[in-house]
Length: 429
Image (cartoon, rainbow, N blue to C red):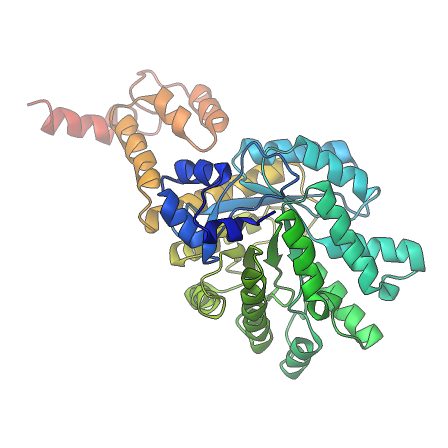
């Protein structure tokens, strides 16, 4: 069976390609060309029947990912399924299962069974947990333990893997030479780095990258090359360790694409506003315009409890400069496992950022939405404004709670409605 890249290279549009082209209002030929070049990915395991697949990359709308998953302190699968439902309801294009709690197989299968959007995972989480159960310590994890988990999750139907192939002996040495304020904050990156140091061996995901490609190719899984050395503080942004990892990921991406496997690149992290553009440009340069998947970025370290706002500022700018895929950040970031409201607020903040990025990039679909809202506001058509808003329920409640005397104004301006005055003075004469 040919992978999507191989099919695109032969210029044969599949039903999936036709669906994405129609959804994105892009020509089939343009989509095929960009997929063949590795500048667009469509995450979909060949074993996973998806209701709502999506394309990620150049010339497409900016997509949003939401994270769910159990923790060692909370393993209620029903709650995670509720989070999955909320994330999709408010517009998440993909969802990642980051579970590290009990019964990971059952959790993953249930999430895959209930989702309508692509599902991603970080296989080293499950591999580390299984190694601890099997050997007494995740430091005793073998390369076969790790690869077995990739095979298992691929067979379950996972659509994309985050694999931290760029955390190697060499990149860790680079980190040691330029000490950070906050070291390694990626959980997968930290697990990998600790394993490398303890065993004095190379990262199996890097050393046996050909095996990772083999698994991904068989199931047409998209590899998301993880930023294990992403900065967790704005003081560590764009340092030598981060950039050295990015350069390595670019080389690995090229290898995967040449073998017919789709690849995207993960990026920071905590980045001050004035460095966001540079980070996007570096990724596009070193990774040959592979789709860029950014966590935020968070533009300040002090927004605890409001990190979804910090991230929305960063991701809006990142999207405008060329980031293709935004991983949401919730108000619970750095504090706790997110609840349903956190998931909702995180998705909404990221959807606003993604839409803002689309406007900046000249998306006709994005501009049409804002145009329709502008017309509804001018007409004081509250029903239409509520319908088109990103959270209609919230808008409806706010309007109902403060019902004005006259239906064609709001209680903020009342008789002094600027739109109404201008209409009377300039448009009715």
